[in-house]
Structure formats: C-alpha cells, structure tokens
Image 1 (cartoon, rainbow, N blue to C red):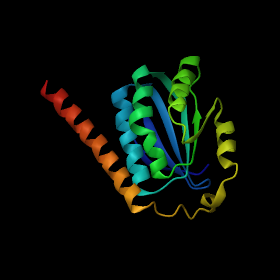
Image 2 (cartoon, one colour):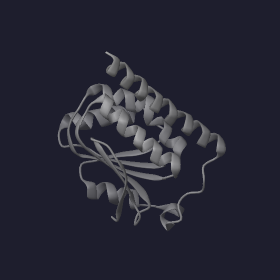
Image 3 (cartoon, one colour):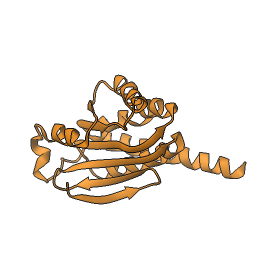
Image 4 (tube, one colour):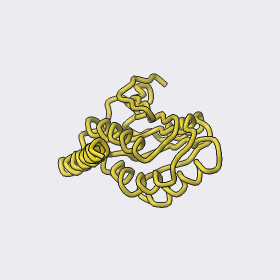
Amino acid sequence: MNLHLLRSTSSIAIYYDSWNNWLFADWHGELTLPAVQVACLELGRCVLGRPYARVLNSNVQVTTTQWEVAGWLAQEFLPFLTLAGVEKFAWVCAPGLRGRNIVQTIINRLPLLQLAIFDELDEAVSWLQQNPGEYATGCGLPLRPTESQSKLARAVQQLELLLRTKAAASSGA
C-alpha cells in the first residue's frame, strides 16, 4: 500500500491508497456514537470530493464499540456509500466476537453493497484486489451523475448540521 493521509479525527485516519486506487479507513480506540458521527462526516467529505469504488475499512485497532453505532451506521451513513459509487467494501473486524457481531448486524441491513468481513488485513486486501475492473488503472472513476452528487452533498450537509446542533446543545447545557 502507498498511503496518503486525507483526513483524521480522534477515532479514524482516512487514507488514499494510490497503488490500489482505494480509500483506506483505519479506525482506532473507543467508538462512541458521537465519535463515529464525526469520523463519518470526514469520510463523507472524502467521497463527496472524489468517487472511490473500493474501500478498505479496518477496525483492528478498535478497543470498544457502542451497540448504537451499528444501527446508526446501517440506517444513516452506509446506505450513502452506494450513492457515492462504492462497489466493494472490505471490513476487517476488531479482535473479539462483539466487533464481528456489530459488523454482521450492519451487513444484514445493506444488501446492495458488496461487503465482506475479514479477520486479517491481508485477506481483505486480496479480496479487494480481485477483479479490480477499470478503477484499478489509477485514472479514478468517472464523475458520478449530477443527481447522485446532489443527494450525496445534501447527506453530508445534513450530517454536518446534526453535529453542529449537538455541539451547540451540549455547550449551552
């Protein structure tokens, strides 16, 4: 992998892998719903600016995840990945059964996305590299349709507004 840092928060580092032409999301620490929402806003900004057909998502360094994260991801964020142009999503689980159960809960709610669970990063990389198609050339994907881009932009704006509203409410309390 040849990684270029795009964005980071307290719980995620988001890279572009120029050798494989995909997005690499490297999560770490305790994943609370507020931390995940902030991290997903940064992910949303990344996919808004450029389409990525493949995403490598690693939870290897995650220590704990709140159960409410799974429902929010499945209902509020991950459905937009297909709109953003993501075709294949490799999810490397955190060690431990609970992390795998949370990921499986999410997968069960996302039938349109080609998503696979892995225990090892190397396995996930190999799976993403299978049948890379035209997006492996390094030229990137064609721009997404205007309607899809508009929907995606609105989703990112809504998440940003939600986080600002929460921040304002907690600072005023």
